[in-house]
Length: 336
Image (cartoon, rainbow, N blue to C red; front, side):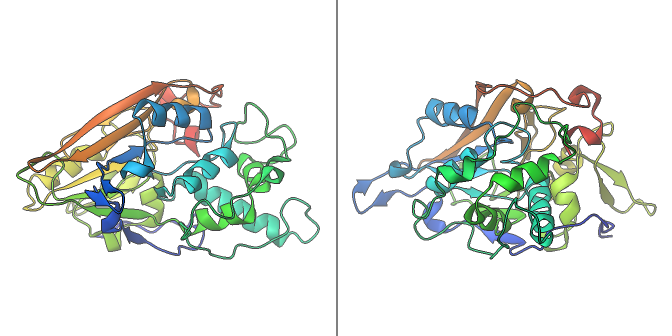
């Protein structure tokens, strides 16, 4: 049974599922000789650029050696430098998926555009590719930072302008188009090696997936918002739930994957209350950097015999925000 479709507004989706190009998956050589590329998959950044830079420095990220950066969504909002995070992602040619905060910012930008007299952002979204052919070209300049973002932003500022509106107002048109083109699901086909604890496929989403449902039939709202599962009335399946629940959705995902011949490991974020999650077939990477905790990444490399992965964390390097609702309480409004 497919999940119930949500009535919440979802900004038009350009690409639902994207396949990571094979040339970005552990390249072994280039025109300049051998390289040892890795996938570096990073949890929710939320505008914490200094923390992202510290994490990339810790793992010695080097695009020239074939490393590829992937972000699990919620690059923006709440933190001090959403513009800088997108700048960096675009400069590094990163891949990413849409999170609930990207969706909210895109909706806010559309609302601003619809207000003819609004001075906040004059242009409409054009739907440019998420990764341009030359990701270092046409990057926005300092003019994109002319509007000051408050140091600590909750769901709404004292002026009544929402966080998403504030973020949308400082992003360039090029950045908004980049966000709009992000897929909801990024699928990575792993090379065949004798040993891989990650299975045959990696699937990157922002919040989660419902087991026993194909990727094509997943609920877009659930992909960006879910934290747990609710069993359907016929007890044959599940629907996604935003609240934390007694256990994470990954528990049922693991049970389902154990019955599959071809295994899929999901990498996701969104669930700051549970922090870093490591199960048999899923890794949750939202470790609460926004609230002063760690920023987390999974670093994946391959050799002739095995695919290896490790979790790397850095302490928050930016000024954290104070959540309006305690993350520890698990209330779904803590991260909307």
